[in-house]
Length: 179
Image (cartoon, rainbow, N blue to C red):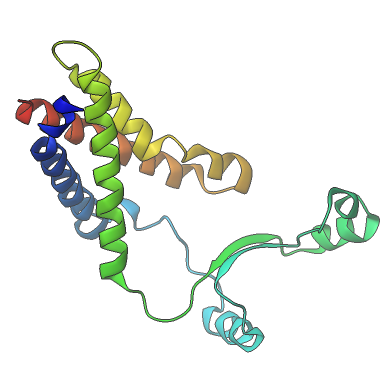
């Protein structure tokens, strides 16, 4: 714990560095522009969904209440008829400040664990070990969305490349400021 106590500045600096790099990637570069497509007849779709007053949350359509129900001919026909989708509904204004704070806290957690692993990897921390740890924190769970929920592999691969960049920035910053 004593070692980690002395790493607060490298952890904070690496989180700030990744925050800046991620802001550039997502706001200044066209890299992620195609991650989400515009739905045809957007206004009509929004009007129809608004009338249903769906609460904020994650939804799957169609969704069976049990494995048994999902095996019924009626459920299979409903799925075959479509549309089949997974959606997240959000209401109200986007509180970008709140999301930025949550993102920064997440970065601090990943940088903390990368430093923790680096501090326990030997007398001289390995930049590679800290980078791999950071990469796993940033991107380790991205593939499941493409495997299970048919998220575009292009979107997932772009996000994994982001994770490699974030991992490299985390490792380089930690290594440069290591006491």
